[in-house]
Image 1 (cartoon, one colour):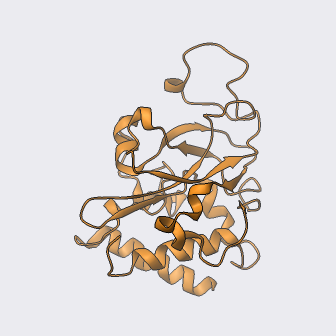
Image 2 (image 1 turned 30 degrees about the horizontal axis):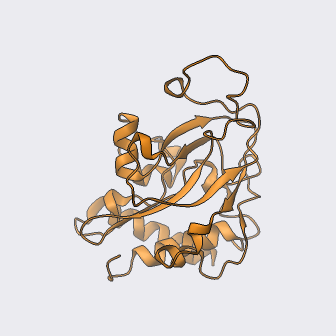
Length: 213
């Protein structure tokens, strides 16, 4: 499985950079929000840091906050069972996704991005899972803070979270976002035999198919 996932990632990156007819909307497979080359998969779908509302319009998510000591996990929502996104969780019965990893012990963290319809997330964006377990060392970005409050940290702020999202675009395209930079740190756990790697493989395989969304 590890070799297959690696090959699929390489193919997707190549298509994202070179192909003009790829159905993935501007190659948005993982929305981590970082443009640094070291962040691996996240650089595929992040064009540049632009106004947060514009970013949300294009990817479905925008930056909610960040922290660097520990990471959380995802809990699936009812929308994850919708036929529109059934392919994402094919072969996965777990309700908890990514409660393991080499980056902070979980798949949700470092920078987390959320869906926010008031800030430009398209109305057809589906929140498939949301993060839990972020510690109190996570804080929102300056644009998210409008008053001084002890309730803004990651352990108490419901808006400081990572949302796993999916949405279709015009012309048969689609965008899948994990909303977390730490996602990649959970891929190799247990020799790639885990639900983060399975979600990744499911998404890449579906996005490489010819059939439009």
